[in-house]
Amino acid sequence: MKASVGGYARATDLQHAIKLLDSADGMARVLAGGQSLVAAMNMRLTAGDLLVDISRLSELRGVTDEGDTIRIGALTRHVEVGDNALIKEHAPLLADAVKFIAHATIRNRGTIGGALAHADPAAEFPACVLALGATLQIMGPDGGRTIAVEDFFLGLFETDLEPEEVLMAITIPKAEAGERQVLQEVTRRSGDYALAGLCLVKRQAGHRLTMLSVGEQPELATGAMAMLDAGNIDGAVAALRAEIDPSSDTNASASYRRHIAGVLLRRAVDQMTGDVR
Amino acid sequence: MSEMFRDKVEIDLTVNGEAVQARVPAGQHAVDFLRQELGLTGAHASCEHGVCGACTIRVDGETVRGCLTLAAQLDGADIWTVEGLSDTDAIRDLQDAFVARNALQCGFCTPGMLVAVEELLAKGGVPDRAVIREHLSGNYCRCTGYEAIVDAVESVAQKRTGKVTS
Ligand SMILES: Cc1cc2nc3c(=O)[nH]c(=O)nc-3n(C[C@H](O)[C@H](O)[C@H](O)COP(=O)(O)OP(=O)(O)OC[C@H]3O[C@@H](n4cnc5c(N)ncnc54)[C@H](O)[C@@H]3O)c2cc1C
Ligand code: FES
Ligand code: FES
Image 1: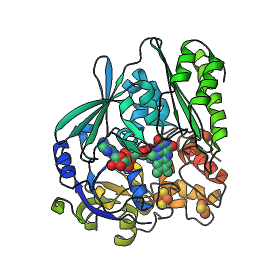
Image 2 (image 1 turned 180 degrees about the vertical axis):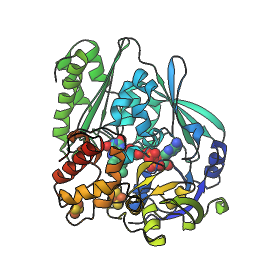
Image 3 (image 1 turned 180 degrees about the horizontal axis):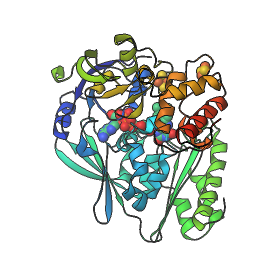
Image 4 (image 1 turned 120 degrees about the vertical axis):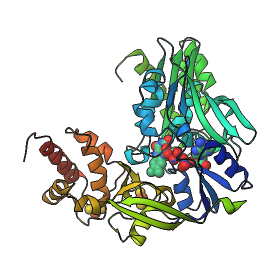
């Protein structure tokens, strides 16, 4: 179908974008890569939005080294995340995730900020940044604020962002020496959303484990994490299957997703310890 | 409030090497602008939610979904469609290989395929068949079963790099 749009404005800088959002009484919507939003408008899941096109804001694009962390601008495109040297070295999970996301043409346009703001529980980046313990930088009419990723995702397609706020950047702690980051997922065809997926990070402080496509929002699987810290893989698999709450749909049943979760965890652990998968 | 938002947007762009100026409805898709306003009907509008790839066009050197891009976003952009790539002979060898290998039947997917393939081939070298398939995973063909398309792409990559000809 065709999109129904209330109006369009091209933001010239971040303050202009905030002003536009603030002027629209909650009717405005940020347009970044458009790879989820325009599709949603075409399907008439949303109509009459006043679009604030932020895609030209170069200050929101690119990756910088900030010492102990790297900062990824919200408008950094999937293809750039996959190719970026700083990300490959310090947050390889994100670079690895890119090849699982959609198709080349969509990765040319889709942005990491858009993927996080969209908060699709089947998307890779939300689960990855939660596993990595990222911090998000947000700008609104009253200035900037910072929020831990643990507090950002609030539900199905729901985040802590207010309608007049813009996600500016994502800050990720650099991987420490010896840290391992692994993404495993099952899809029917290349580029499809995962039937289930799993991100596992192993640091000195312990494991961090998140899943995609098994609930309403990405969450830390704390039970399985504690078992992994104790070196109990079987216990971790059982804990993970117990603590997730997948739903059944046309693609997979809940019990299949629960089964796959355990399989993915074993594969991730094998991949970390170097065993052949 | 909403006088800052426009329901018609002025755009100034280049399409297949020619300067174009237009005033487009805020919600118009890039592919509909090309088809309906400029008469460039090569890129097709099909699923209109990013799944099939029939609407693939080149914007500023990269392939883009014409159904997930608004015409309003194209201000200042350099657009190439299958018509322009055909007129400049940029993809002549690829088109010949598609014909020679029976890589199209109804042809509906072909303009999007060609634009997507050209992006891959422009990187140089001879990509593995698996890489070709992966690159085309977002371009659906309901007729050929893909094997002939992969053959055609592989043969052009080989010819362009001066390796094995067939
Ligand atoms: C066929 C298809 C297959 C796909 N497959 C996958 C897949 O396998 N895995 C996957 O993860 N994704 C997939 N995607 C989604 C894709 O990754 C999107 O690019 C991404 O989810 C959204 O990024 P965007 O920049 O295009 O955001 P947009 O579509 O522009 O915006 C999405 C939402 O986020 C808001 N928003 C965007 N940027 C900001 C910001 N900086 N601040 C505040 N709000 C913002 C918008 O208002 C909107 O509500 C697929 C998409 C398609 C069309
Ligand atoms: S019409 Fe754009 S991807 Fe199908
Ligand atoms: S040739 Fe008919 S869809 Fe590809």
